[in-house]
Length: 288
Ligand code: SF4
Image (tube, rainbow, N blue to C red):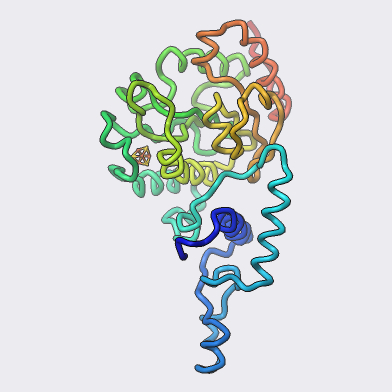
């Protein structure tokens, strides 16, 4: 894919590729240009491919994609994450693996001892991939590991994690019933927010976890995860507690447990958000 492709066109192209993936089409081939076809004859059957993967999109496909882009621009909050189209087009080892346990293992193996972004050399002890039920109906997504998580290799194990456990329990679930992951898998130094390039590099692995687990509901915790998945720069207080569509899941943005530790007065708002999630999942609050 040429590096000169318009970023929004790339994003639209990525969405189109995902659409084909959802139809079960994973393999794509380049089509020869019309000029090449006219001089070299008709392409072989294996070279006949969807035009959208042509390195130079046809005017029809391009105008179609530009219409999609225009429609997206009119939305208040986009519902799709920015994708690296190359990440999507490249076949992934977990494709076609029906067992989510095996598929998650393949994603973890693909991540390896990752050095894809600068967080690998900024003091991380280990990669914090994710934890929980690979068939979970509910997935929580935070921003990145903190010191405790970095030390233990598991997301949400510090004070914020204890609070998240209590929230999960209040919903009538156990921690092992849900799946918990972060946007970035390595600890940002000094607990700073993950930076854009780190999010762009690491979040495709989160998307693959989501595609594998196929939760009914994704509950994003804090601004970073909500803004990443919904591709918005709006502050979370503007859209917290509202439902969004994210791929096949419903997405509920709420505050991060760490924020609640600093602002316990916001707990009732979060409980309202969790109750909406419980209603969709048919959960009853835990009896005291
Ligand atoms: Fe790799 Fe993600 Fe860690 Fe960056 S944050 S080094 S992309 S695992």
